[in-house]
Image 1: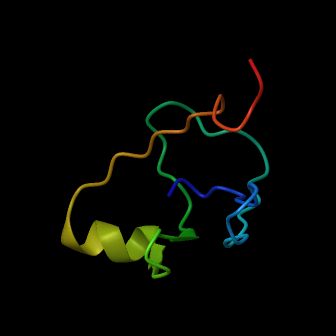
Image 2 (image 1 turned 45 degrees about the vertical axis):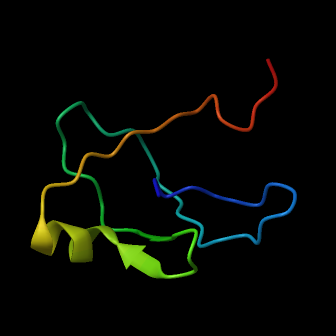
Image 3 (image 1 turned 60 degrees about the vertical axis):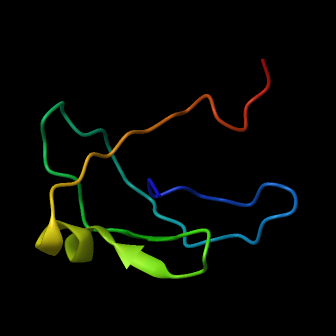
Length: 65
């Protein structure tokens, strides 16, 4: 759920998050929402209220090579 843009073939486009600038390592992530595979919308703030969250961004996904 990493604030992804979505839109790959066969999937509906989920919420889009636009972030200006880069975050420094260890910086707090801005609150965002993302759609899970079951269609439920989760927000970072909602998840942080109940537990710790590890955000991992994988830019190689959906790219050739």
